[in-house]
Image (cartoon, rainbow, N blue to C red; front, side, top):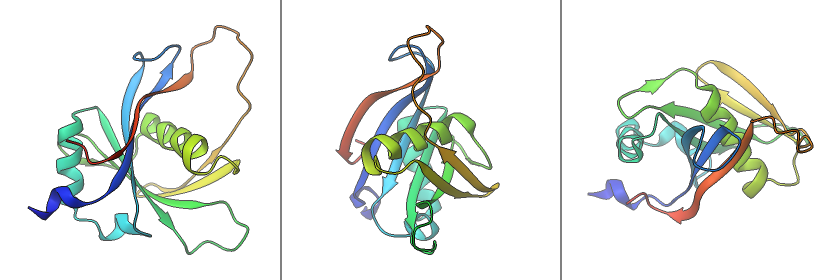
Length: 147
């Protein structure tokens, strides 16, 4: 049906990993329409999360209501393969990493509007090679539809 026709950019991000393919993978989907996550069908988001079949899939949509000069603000929702959840730390980190590295590299701060309130993400300089795990890696980066 129409469900598969929505254009989304998505990435699978490994959070809390010292090397790729380790850590907690989360899917991050950026909905292209402004404010889309408020209007996108919950069942569609749930079906996408079920297809990714990762512990968490995050859906982002830009919010335009913020004041000029304020940190960019995004609606953020989290789904497991079976249900929506109120909060997910690693999918939030994955979302911030995705936005800071691909969508808004010039920004150092983001705000997420969530069911658990407003969450703020700040970009911090990458630590030197201390061997401490905690990096975030893209497993795949692509534009299009989850197949």
